[in-house]
Image 1 (cartoon, rainbow, N blue to C red):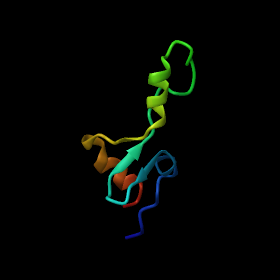
Image 2: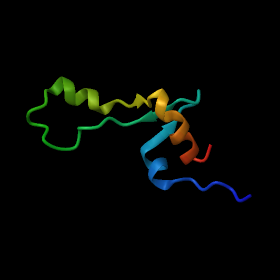
Image 3: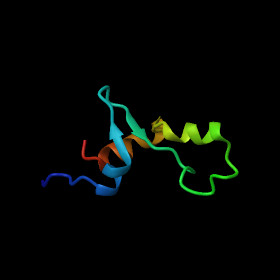
Image 4: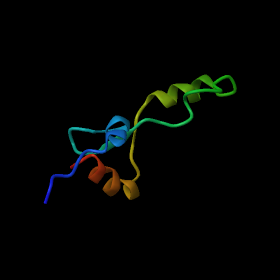
Length: 64
């Protein structure tokens, strides 16, 4: 059976930490920022862990 190829769109959007968690960037940070508070905009900078329901699918698409 051939090797699984990495889905490049997934590889660009997610990263795996040293402990094996999958991290993602936050949504809603790219435009229409004038109505969003500075505190909220700062929060968009941080990455967050992927939901447990999505881990299996994302992990397989990352090729691991």
